Length: 88
Image 1: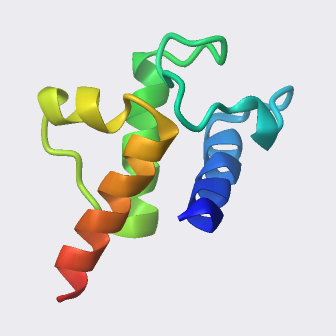
Image 2: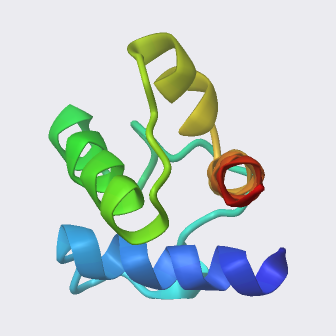
C-alpha cells in the first residue's frame, strides 16, 4: 500500500500542478481538503476525474467523497478496494 500511496502523491502533484509541493509535503493520514495544501472543491473535481481515468474508479456522490478524501490513506484504500471489486 505504501508504494501506491507514493504513486498517488505524485499523481496529485501532477494533476493539480502543485509545483511548490513535494511528495513528502502531502500528509498520509492528515486531512487532504482544506489543509495546508490549500486544496478546494475544484481540485477535488480534478482529482475525481483523474481517479476515474487512471484507475477506473468512480466516486458516486458527495457523501462518499467526504469519506474518500478524508486523508490520502483513505483515498488509496478506496481506490484499491474498488479496483479489486471491478477486476473480479
